Length: 58
Image 1 (tube, one colour):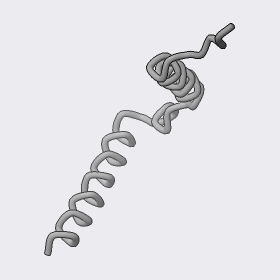
Image 2 (tube, helix red, strand yellow):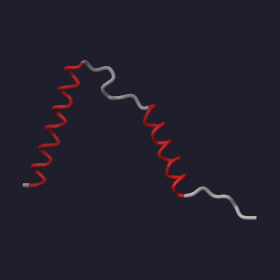
Image 3 (tube, helix red, strand yellow):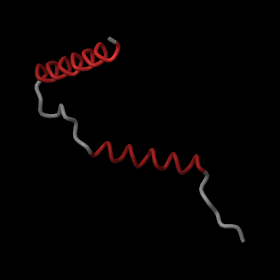
Image 4 (cartoon, helix red, strand yellow):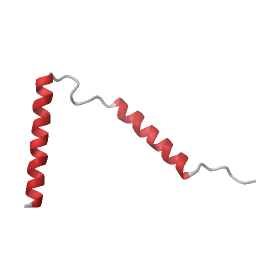
């Protein structure tokens, strides 16, 4: 009798489902911030990424 195995697609979908469930448990880093604090943090991140992009391409 043949052993019933999951297809790679089903295994991948199950892994994605587990990752989504785990990610859902992690609280957002913006949870306890005010709107102004969030905007400042996003601007800092944007500036950092911009500087890295310019430094990488210069």
